[in-house]
Image 1: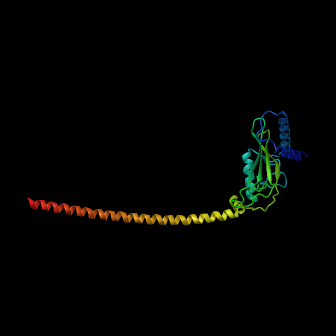
Image 2 (image 1 turned 45 degrees about the vertical axis):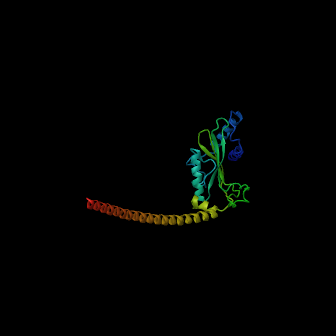
Image 3 (image 1 turned 90 degrees about the horizontal axis):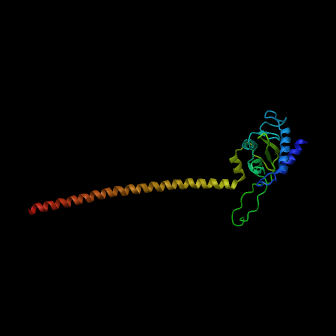
Length: 236
């Protein structure tokens, strides 16, 4: 009963106004009661409920920080075969500090219609209304506790695949396009290298021609000076 109560109250907190701040005695009382209930059901680090794998989230699981919760769920998602997305953030109305965070499957919700679809290429559909997620909340001890965990997904998973492979599976057309552009880029680089070498050869030939021409001109100048010198000597 306590667990159900905490989950219901945590769900209701998801819709709080994230930007509103100020003193609120009712909220403080509610938060205190919620923290007490969470701490009642929160097992120790080594006291994982029976039947739950050590690398799977569970309601009551504690983390030292929001970042630690994010890292754990991200590692879990990589092993199971999906990608997570950072979602709703709840802030305290008293001081604006973060007190709750929802981490969801990146296929959560549905993509809104794009007004530009008539003039741009339609994107691949990636959101299918998946409800898998965890909700973590900060309690009075300073730790972050899982207050809600939805394990089931509404789409196939890809166990063992890395984040990049999962993204490629979701955007196959984009992946092919990137591969084609990469191949074209490699071809253009080779072509540019060929052009560069041709230009270098042309410049080398021009330089050799200039040196040869300079020598010929210098030779002519020397001959003219020699002839002029002989003519002056003959006159004397």
